[in-house]
Image (cartoon, rainbow, N blue to C red):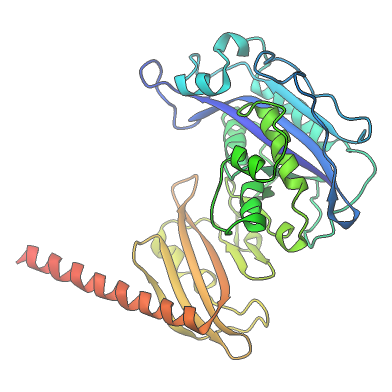
Length: 369
């Protein structure tokens, strides 16, 4: 399988000059990517980029970086894109990228660049090899990897704006390398910026940051250093496209928790009334569990529950209610085994949420008198 380490740069409307559009709030102006594949034993190989080569601030229209001869199967992709939506460069974008609109006007349009990019993604990277992790092979032969969760969403939003076919149907599986870095090297919760991770891993900083190919290269170097198969199984899903029906909903079990991504519902009431959304099954023995603490919330967005499996112990449920691209909502539910101490803390959280709700109800009752 090929792994496409992708980074995008985009421009946005400058409210003082041109209004930001809701259908395309971020217009992609640069695509950079590094292609690599897994090697036996979890070993990665990535191209070595030479300092001062194309891709630096002074050469915005350069093509690929040179690839070291020892890794001939690897390749890179880089193009800037001629804007069609925002004709002025937002001051923040210009300051970060050190590019202006005149630099971009020499590029091709987004549909033209995207066609070339997707064709490049499908080309083999060299001799076939697989990562030794329990992830199904992508039907197209490649999987994306990005720093953070936003790039594939904005890529597909730009594709939709130009009426281009999206990335398959339903959620797109990918590696969020920012998340994997935290899981592998830090506290599993922090989300660091790219330069922090590069410094943390002592990766040589031979190129600038905040250009698409440079950032894709650094992201690939970080992914290269993540060897633990338990970490590499933690794939993420871009949910610009939701499952279209119950059969396409995502059910995935990792080594320490299970995740479920629902289809779109008309509203939150319909979502919470759905049996699958509210179910709590043990992801180890697949038994339906009786809830010790029913679903509750303190903010209307995150819901929690506590169940008990006679064989495996206490299980915490969490439902995040999120707005879909359309008018409706969808659920991301996780189920995770927790300790008895954590179970007590969750039960106490329910009591606090109930008390807060009673106080609010009393205040409302006083105002209506």
